[in-house]
Image 1 (cartoon, rainbow, N blue to C red):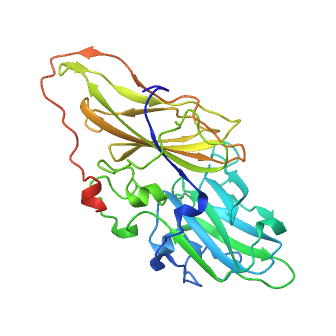
Image 2 (cartoon, helix red, strand yellow):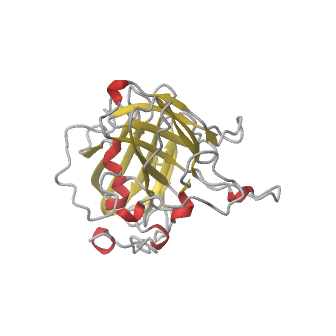
Length: 338
């Protein structure tokens, strides 16, 4: 895999993730039994309250009127990330920090709105963020019940404007996700995951082919790249393979790697420390076609690109291996989404 690889590209605008979210994604809870109560706002915006427990989520709040800004409190676990948008305008992004640093797992940004960002009538605040997992209960203090989502929110202004409705998008099927082979942690709530673009057999023939992840994007948001390639490794050779990426603190971004429908890599460019993602034979087809999807989430206004994306071998070991390792049997796009 090199910079000359052919890629199909879907450049997702922030609102395309939820613009067609069905009514079942509408937020309706105004209370929770969790010991960690919301800090502000009428509705409970905790992902697990709506059956979404892992991956990424997209929150969308609607309001009318001339609010002057918004205060948010977002929790996603150590080193999580978020981006916020008002209508078509980028407000800002943020990232937590690891437990080995200062251990930030909740961020409370405030954003001021300008008149050119507001619309007459319906305004839409979109917040996208990911989860780095749930807390453990080391201190026997219900820490494992700490939610993931928006812990509190408040519109700013003198006229008492409130959000009318909220929606959330999470993994396809929620707690009834249909992919029992790859499991409940394989997918999140990005648009491409919900439509199954990461799955083998997805038709990406209409996607743009004019750019690559090495070129990236010049604005904040999420771009998805999809490609396929064939391998022809001898049967009697044991060749470990891994995707190698590179850290980048100047243009912070977050990456997911899907291989034949399996999520096998997650990069936080400003943190790492992992930049190499081994993929075993059986997930990778060593003697046939492979379908790979890369999502690039740029957090800053200048966008981001991948400085390195390579599939490299870790060695070539001849052995007495005679067994043919076939692909793990797992459902494709037609099985799960058609």
